[in-house]
Amino acid sequence: MLAVDTNVVVRLLTGDHPQESAKAKELFERETIFVALTVLLETEWVLRSAYGFQPARLVVALRAFAGLRNVVIQDPPALAKALAWAERGMDFADALHLAQAGDCDGFASFDGRLAKAARRAGAEKAVSL
Image (cartoon, rainbow, N blue to C red):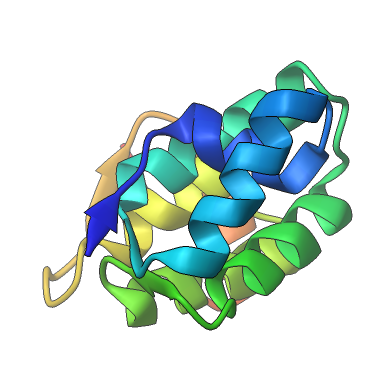
């Protein structure tokens, strides 16, 4: 199994660099690829900030990527929760942080918008301080 950096995932998802995108595609076809949640967090940020992906497109892209045959995601249940919450309006990073909170009693933040968005998305653990 081979772990990859964010730039490899971005090249695969955007196809924006002919040589590097082709290498990324070939790598994902040939190898079993491990993807850390931190890589997905950074990938979402790059796609949103540098490529202008909107939230709905981001969720579709990350969900499809995670479902690729040779891709092994770190903590798939947490990613699934985060994507579902993001689909319901939460910021992906906030959703991923909350999903990683696991069995904790709650998730405290000074960000009142996070707590409101979490409640609307069905994630009740977030509380605003």
